[in-house]
Image (cartoon, rainbow, N blue to C red; front, side, top):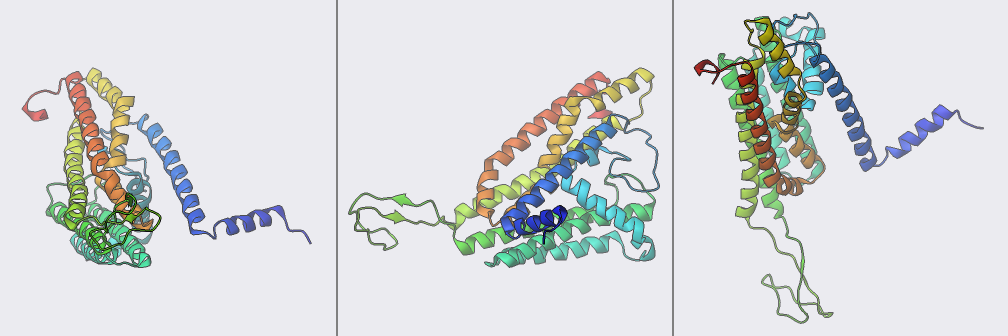
Length: 352
């Protein structure tokens, strides 16, 4: 008895997904394709609009209304977390039905989840560490959702921060504290496991090592030494500092670009120049570079490393490459900001 071709394909797919590695690979490819398609659509929508006086929409779309912050937000936040939070609130009317639940209450909740996630990450069990990753992803979801609730209560539209509100300060403190809790979780896990250096080969019939190991009879001995705690602390500290610098420079850059591209120009010529600058390939490259290195993206990278049990490898890799990438993107951003301001004659104290 023969089976239909679709059934054979389905059986083959299920057999392929039985291994964890194959499932992770397929999921990664699917997400990569999804992000690429959505980024192409985002770029096409950006070329059709400006960031000044955008039409307000009744239903949520990841492509309208656009803002500088949204254009510079990590793809995971833009196309998964923000998308699901907006649609969840739109279809369930949670913020209106449970109007007594304030954004600060949600912030306090995701702060508690941040501490719980940090605790689970310290575990020697890979399953518990992965559970900690899932809980931190829930924390990130709630971190975006408190903004959705705030905008719903205030009747605001668009993905941007209201720095004049006390809730922005509360949310920033909760985000920072949760990030610190995750970093300490990573640090304590590495301390408990005492990361080992790469084994080295000794000369034949040398003396025993400092840890008391006897040399082998064939004349070769592999010594396994462990990194000291202060070395591990320095590595994790570098990641934490990079995360903090990324967050601070991201906020300043979005504010600077927002002041350029959301300001109403006085003449039609200035409006045309402003639109050309926004639609230029250079501006898009700067925006997209931030999407890859901003703080939320960096958090997603380390969460993926924890999930794949590659924490130490990621910490070592990001120690210098992260700072170099951040420095390069900031230089690109400042040059573009300077060039566009000069083109639009945005000079003086009001534009600093």
